[in-house]
Image 1 (tube, helix red, strand yellow):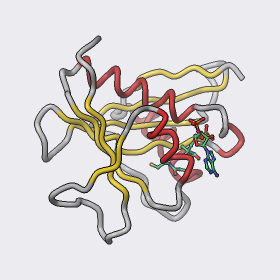
Image 2 (cartoon, rainbow, N blue to C red):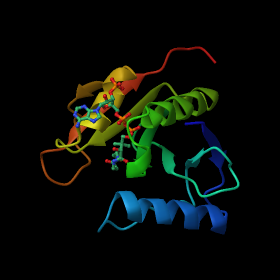
Image 3 (cartoon, rainbow, N blue to C red):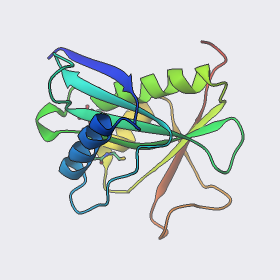
Length: 150
Ligand SMILES: CC(C)(COP(=O)(O)OP(=O)(O)OC[C@H]1O[C@@H](n2cnc3c(N)ncnc32)[C@H](O)[C@@H]1OP(=O)(O)O)[C@@H](O)C(=O)NCCC(=O)NCCS
């Protein structure tokens, strides 16, 4: 597999449509996230002119200074198992550093071992926020302090 990942403009209608299509495929039954805010990436298997096979987003934290939120990531089932989510975490970390952010946070549902293991692989630690932001009490919260390197 020859994957390539590019940052894209979520406010571009073609990009928004591509992310929505992927979102529907990987999160069936969930309302797709709006892509007109934050930073977005698409991944292709080979030709970036073709249909993307994965996506990820990054938002500036609304609660904490110098912090970001890994908002969504999804890989089409036929392309899972190749560490793409890990790569999508790394590109977002690079972006966060370039923005001068110090922390990245996210949350997972408990029955998502691939997602949790990608975060563990990338150095994230579970924690309990003072004010949990997810509905329900079964979310797992993660954060990582970014090193001060470019
Ligand atoms: C979660 C998701 C993005 C992972 O994509 P991926 O890049 O194919 O992930 P991988 O299959 O490479 O697995 C990532 C890690 O989990 C491990 N893993 C995969 N499936 C696993 C399972 N069933 N049980 C335990 N570990 C598992 C892998 O070994 C890998 O660990 P490593 O980094 O230490 O090698 C993908 O499954 C997906 O799109 N799921 C639906 C949407 C979703 O849940 N998104 C995340 C929350 S926003």
